[in-house]
Length: 138
Length: 166
Picture 1 (tube, rainbow over the protein chains, first blue to last red):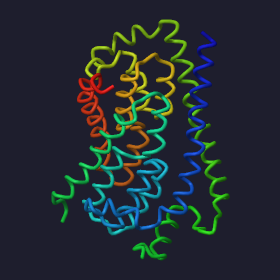
Picture 2 (cartoon, chains in turn red, cyan; picture 1 turned 180 degrees about the vertical axis):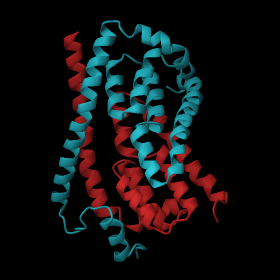
Picture 3 (cartoon, rainbow over the protein chains, first blue to last red; picture 1 turned 135 degrees about the vertical axis):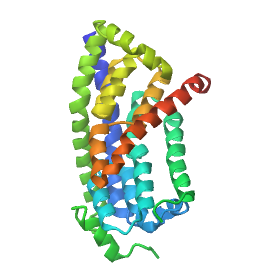
Picture 4 (spheres, rainbow over the protein chains, first blue to last red; picture 1 turned 60 degrees about the vertical axis):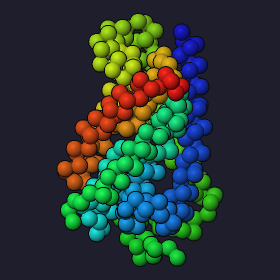
């Protein structure tokens, strides 16, 4: 029993370690080098968001709601985003954030990649699409 | 040309309280990424280790049976055994790291782990993240029940399909 306990503890922790370390190296480089380039924003602009709105959306999507929280709150309070865009960003992020870290952790636990990713992408994109075609606060 | 000029960049990044140095080398960035990775891993272990230990020995000792029968009528809606309530509750109240500890301690099938993972990815860490949403604008705290509802909806939809897919 103790042996089972230790084997699965060490194999699971090790798997998480070898996922997390390279992930954070990549994310750090992404954040400091590429996040500020506007070309990132293009696919979201097609979904009806302004370039300005894409920054909090992308940082939340990549780095998580909690890590990016200060950034997102400051941004939303200081920017000229309208009520609809703020709503779109928050609803999108509340159901789909920290896309890389959380997904990889559950893959390590044994979940199926497509089944945990596709439904979330569909849900999050449909939020943006629905909000694109309805009028709120305009 | 990029549409975010330097002036805007400063506005975005100064408010974040982080430095604006673009001159950092890849090596320096990789090093700080490594540090962040290690901190995150330690943070994860802080939750994963105690939860995994408790759940593993409760399960081995057969102490989870009552808990499981208590929750199995609700969990069967999602095609899950009663024990699955543990990672779901821990994940929603605490965080994903605690839920991973519980998942590792239980004996669940791939399909069951997939359903639990999907639910938790949509709805997790509700207290802390609810506070963030509240801070943005109090009305957004309504996203807490919304996420919970979505996670249930998705699991109920996926449950009858999953055995045909996996």
